[in-house]
Structure formats: C-alpha cells, structure tokens
Length: 154
Image (cartoon, rainbow, N blue to C red; front, top):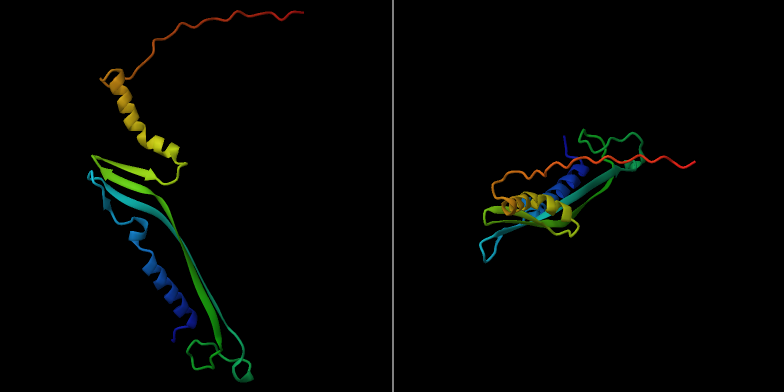
C-alpha cells in the first residue's frame, strides 16, 4: 500500500520538531562558577502540531474515482499542509554546590515557593539560636480568666 501524502507531511513536521526539542532544550548545558557551583538553566518547553489535507476534484471528469490509496484506481489531486509551533520559557536555574541544591526561579512572584524551600534551613537556625538541643519550645500554660457577664440595660 502506497504512503498517503498526508503521512509525508506529518512525518516531516514531527522530525523537524524532534530535531528542535531535545533534553538539552529543557535542561541546558551546565556552567561552572568560580566558586565551584554548577548552574543548570531550566526551561519550560511546549509545542503544538497540526496537519490536514484533502483530496478534491474528479480526475478526467468521471465520478467514482478511487483516492490515492494505491489500489490501482485513479488518483485524486491532493492539497494539504502542516505546521508546528514551539514555545520556550525560562523557569529558573538549578544551582548545585556546597552540599546543597537550590532552584533560583526567574519569576519574581515565586516568593512563597522559595520560602517553602528555605523553611528547613530557617527552622534549624532558629533551633540553634533558641537552645541548640533541638527540643521544641513549649510556652508555659496561662491560667484562664473568666469574663464577667454584663446585663443589658432596660
């Protein structure tokens, strides 16, 4: 069975996308800083793909002609096209060094994500400042005070 023309369009477009988008597009080449940290750029990659085609007309003005399926019938004229789009957006930098791994986001609105990432370090520093033994701080219980009830004036 012969290959349909739309298959050729799709194959060409997909091979082009495969050539453009690989793992090095998402996680970039590592860069080593002067202090020994390794910095990896991280990107978000999204892509879309569309293809379409149609056979039109009747060859020789006869009705009932067969399409281009390779079965010996007359082949109809084919029109088609395909397209693809790729978007690459930088997300941040992965910094590996000094016994830790950090993600430095490019977006300035990622404050809360950064705060969650730093929470264990902040807790360790607070524990070492308070007592150093790692024991949890528990405040002394305070006696409950009773409020006097007031009667509404009539």
